[in-house]
Amino acid sequence: MTTIETSAPAGTEPQSTLSVALLTLGCARNDVDSEELAGRLAADGFALVDEPEDADTVLVNTCGFVDAAKKDSIDTLLAAADLKDQAGGSKVKAVVAVGCLAERYGAELADSLPEADAVLGFDDYPDIASRLRSIVAGERPHAHTPQDRRKLLPISPAERSPAASLVSTGSTSGPARARLDPGPMAALKLASGCDRRCTFCAIPMFRGSFVSRRPSDVLAEAVWLAGQGARELFLVSENSTSYGKDLGDIRLLETLLPELAAVDGIDRVRVSYLQPAETRPGLIEAIATTPGVAPYFDLSFQHASNAVLRRMRRFGDPESFLGLLDQVRALAPEAGIRSNVIVGFPGETERDLELLCDFLTAARLDVTGVFGYSDEDGTEAETFEDKHDEDEIRARFAYVTDLVTALNGERAEERIGTTVEVLVEDLDTDRPGHVEGRAAHQGPEVDGSTLVRGCPDAQVGDLVRAVVVESDGVDLVADATGDKR
Image (cartoon, rainbow, N blue to C red; front, side, top):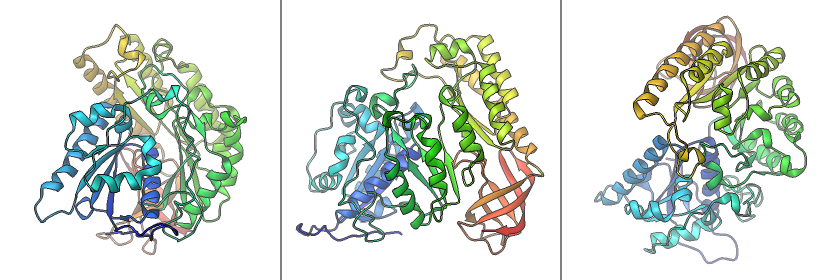
């Protein structure tokens, strides 16, 4: 069990030490939020522990993206609440919901989930330590009434409390963050919020308008993460192609990427979530050709039919999307490319579905996430007519899922015989000399992995070169060449 403890800030009365476990659901942006919460708590004297049953309070950072994610969040909260009832087997005194589901539903969630001792919104984050102390002491704060954050002044993710220092090093300055996962990959937030108005998406309503972090703050956090053992930085935001537009320079990411790649100790920088309609030639070139930047393109197509995309309030068609992929592959033929698509959107015809499948066949994507459409509270698409019934959506979801499973597998087979550089994330203790990690074309958690054979001296965090010899779905098997760094 990992425990991080810090003393109370100078000039304050000592507080009794409380322990907290953070459980994180959802995307990498939530991972960063949890580490920032952990940094604030540790700086205020809380002990961070890994296991919920070892904690005085359990903080569940929820996801509110789609129905399945909401259900996972509720199930996690209920499981944590059950720990309070285990006589002698748990020390849990309070279970608290934070994150997107808590922000999005507030008092409604609190009323429907009395098992949680509190539901806190984003505005509670700066005072999270005092909030948790009062909840453990028996207070039950009123949950907030959600507001459309697009209509509020944005809360910049660049804001950091000087008191929330680098708790693992004892430094008195730096990002308010404590690493909860000591692995060699670390997410780094570029921005928060989104200014787009996609008709199916509720994220801007509870995440707010788009706000870029200052480049100096991003770089400072990158240096800190490198000092904590990170070798790959995974740049996250709701829309990375918009980075810098609110700072007066829409091309700021192109200049920031080489600086991040030059940080001592960082060997790979990866960009997530690119909006195809905003992906400009200069950004493609920067990602595809900058040394130390992974030629990896996370392009959120969502569909290929122009008619469906217009109803989604998005832009594009098969020709423009394939042209974008041609630009990428002209500069980096082995680039990793992933995307997500929604099937069964209101008004989607069989011809629209056929256009999507033809595009996916031609696109040769490494990984494609498929989602069946479902109404999201408060979105424009919720009011649309021409909706498909659930059986039809399930049938379309199954059909496209089967197609992309085959297509992604074929793309992985094309990589047999190529040389890859794999960031080692796990050692196979049952098979000495076998390690598992990710090549440059494989993003964390969702894009498959590579098993490397024949590297008995490799350690977690090493970069090993290997030749791909087999594929299994999107996963690869490779034989080490003997080169590592």
